[in-house]
Length: 135
Image (cartoon, rainbow, N blue to C red; front, side):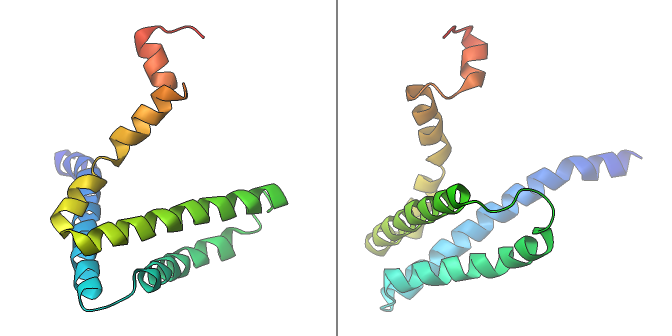
């Protein structure tokens, strides 16, 4: 019983370490590819194609369960893809001129920037609850 409880508590930690190691590995592989002459736009297409292939079975088998696609939702997907691809292009441009170590360190700052933007735009309900801020 204690071993099962310990394993249950270790799963999120192992998943987090795996994701971080994968992120660093992809940064190193991307840096090597960019150094050898790969175009950053081609790299973005490969990343997005791989992500599409990984997520495609979920969308195919989950299609009949849940909300249907509306034009509003498709438009939001388009904007999200445009912003995400632009961010990837900027990431690969920075990676081409720096190191994978710096890119991994900068990627760890994303939650901080997200939190600061949420505070600036007053979107963080947790902060309001902690500080007893009334609207």
